[in-house]
Length: 236
Image (cartoon, rainbow, N blue to C red; front, side):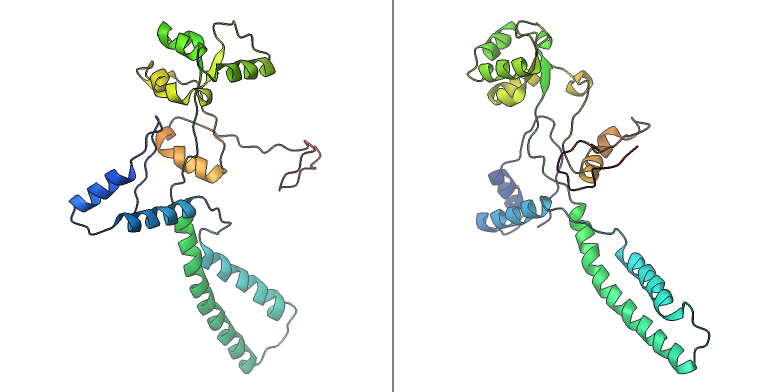
C-alpha cells in the first residue's frame, strides 16, 4: 500500500473508514485490520530519523580508494604484477560489497524522504483581528482562558490589551471558527515558527514557499551552557 500525504492548513485529516471505502470502490480487496497495520508501519517510518548519505555508493567507493592509497600505495616504490593483481581483486570484492550495502542505504534515503507527520500546529492571533464579537466573548469565557491569561502574565503582556495574542492551543474546539475569520489565511499570517529537523521542515515547506525567499539563515544556539548533542563551546 502506498500512501500519498498532503499538508492540511486547517489540520483536517482523512478518516480511516473513508480511506477504506475509497479503496474498496476501486475494487481492491483489503480488510480494516490490514489497513490499520499499514498505517502503523507508515507512522513508525515517518517518525524515525536516520544519518544517511544520499549517494552511499559513490561515497564508499571514494573512501575505499583513499584508504587503499594510504594503506598500500603511499610510500611504495615497487610493486610486482602478482601484488597489483591481488589489489585489483581486493578492489573488485570491496566494490561488490559496497554495491550490496548501498542498496540498503538507498532504501533508507527513500524512507528519509517520505513526508513526516506534523504532530501539532497552532495559530497565534491578536484579539483585535477577530471581527466577530460573539466569538471574542466565547474565547474570554472559555474554560482555558485562564491558562492564556497566565501565559500573558509570564510574558509580560497586559490581558486588557486589545491586541493581546491568543494561542489556539488553548482553544482547539474554537480553532476552526477562529481561522474562519480570515478569507485568505496564508496572506493574513505574518510568519511561521517551525520546530523540526531542518531537512524535513525545509523539504515540507519547499512547494509552498519556492521562489518566495532569497536566503534562509539557520543557526543552532551556541555558547548557552545548555546540554546539546552538538559542540557548544565555540569561541569567537
